Amino acid sequence: MGEVLPLQRKVERPESPEPLWRELVGAELRRERQAREERLTDVAERAGVSTQYLSEVERGLKDPSSEILSAVAGALDLTVRELSTRVASAGTSATGSYGALCLAA
Amino acid sequence: MGEVLPLQRKVERPESPEPLWRELVGAELRRERQAREERLTDVAERAGVSTQYLSEVERGLKDPSSEILSAVAGALDLTVRELSTRVASAGTSATGSYGALCLAA
DNA sequence: ACTAGGTTCCGCCCAGAGCGGAATCGAGCG
DNA sequence: CGCTCGATTCCGCTCTGGGCGGAACCTAGT
Image (cartoon, rainbow over all chains, first blue to last red; front, side, top):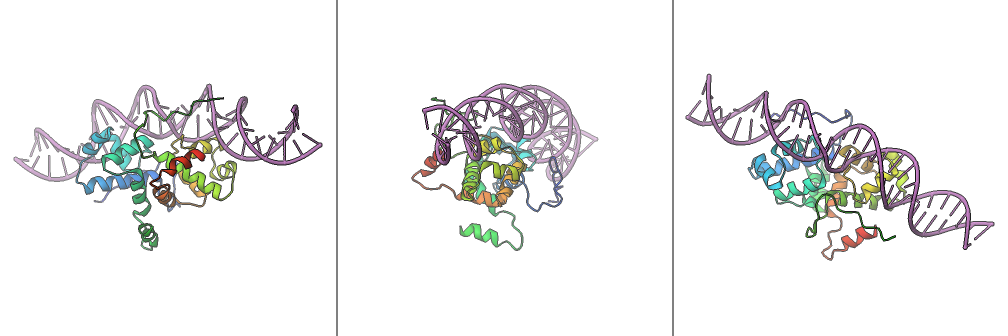
């Protein structure tokens, strides 16, 4: 899908190659939800959050609290650690020996 | 003084074996800072946050924004991905020494 | 054209992020 | 012993962003 990039919060980051934590974790949550072929509503209900808010979290627009992060991860049958593992290894660059390193570790 | 330990946010977690994201990431930040034998003030100044706030983040009492998380990680020469790697693999011992480690820290 | 489902947009309220002053703690010194 | 200092923690406050819900938007099917 040709998605429009979500706007950055607060300050421009024209030079920052590193995405923010909320962008990384949001992308992982959406990836996992779509891999399970589920709707926003499905996961949001299991997690106990609103559908609209989960949409914003997945698009990296909001920093969820740790409680909500756990709840959403749990709704996807993940732990926060597993989520972190995916964040660490996801979307690495073409040079990405880093990704391989994570898998090895 | 016999002060009450700070309450967990919002809901009790009497049965949750999984610590929250802010506890995991806080412990990692403190571990790395201490490995570098630096003070709270040192890292806080480089990150552009207050010393007292960094203390609360390291103790897992506050959910820092993604911007502040990046700044603190950067002050410790880490990326958010590297931090996530450490969160994912830290304290995974089945003996639960992780809890003791937290209390000690 | 209409309908329905899914997702995104947007304004709002209040919970909590982030701060700074003060308290506490431990080590060193005279 | 009391005093001083540095490091960390405690706590109250202000302001902002988390989380919500109504509405708008988008796409596919009929």
